[in-house]
Length: 433
Image (tube, rainbow, N blue to C red; front, side):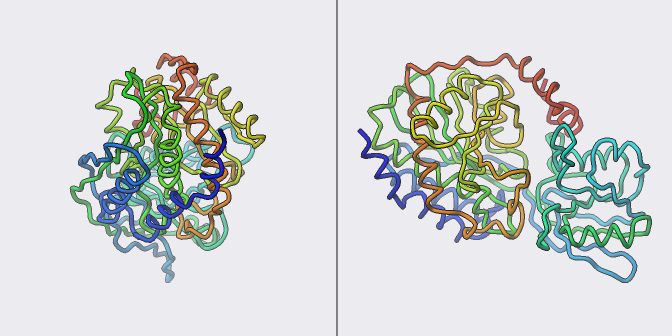
């Protein structure tokens, strides 16, 4: 029966929820907006036909943005504070480290300096170096402050948390600047004195995960997940309103196909992902991981027309996803490498088979983590196409005929070492082995 395909391609359920989320405004972790988004998602899952829709609260370190500034000479440059930066002021000699690769930090004395690193890496580099690793290398080198320069043009300063697993608040002030501002700072002030000021309110806060279920009561479950929070500087349409809207759309589609599910499907919209995977860490810590058959984590969907699924070395996940693509004669890109930067990771690291479902957008993250992460960048046609593919994938994962072997955590650790991820994770305190 294929009626469900037509229903999904004409459904407004998920897209309407996306509009609800972006219209809330600020969904920063621990904020009133995040609470409203979680409640709206709970209600949307219930209306879509899922049962036992509920919220589960947990405590987090709250962080609210104030003013920030970069001053050098007679100039004050536009910037935004990076979440989890301490509320602090620092002055030092400015050091433009270019890409901010590990060797850039090793080759230059940065003690008591204000260091700047770009948000990308060169094409020849063997791995992506995450923002948090660059920040922690600055801290380890004794830097006074950290400036994160966007590599995408358009006068868009980037945001992104600098807190690590070893502490929710960073040790030195951190700000983001646009490519244009950063280029100008490097040209004018490298080697000159610079002042960086961050004002932020640091407080106790509460976040929450959203849960609901479909299918039989089984010993195993498939988790279909997203995160409901977003950075406070934009609508958070791509990151990750679209992912949460997709979870709601999948709940609607799977409610109509519930008799095909052999395994419980649990929908989870996590809170506080952007400040350290707090919601997924909370769930993973209280979950019998042996009961989780697989995780289908939606974070970055709809940003590009072709789905890209990181499979973390689980060959069976790659095979079933490719089979869905072949069935619909629609491209689905599978990437076998590790990806430790979204809510699947607290499960993958202990061997739980998991996807990180995102979009193939080329080498740039584009509008994500900037003021331009807005609804107009997304396309309803793409949303509906991907909902059809992901619905079929979820049904396949919940089928008794589909089996996937768990991984030994030592194998995950070895893969991280082989792919060059381990050094950065050890530096940021995210290495669990």
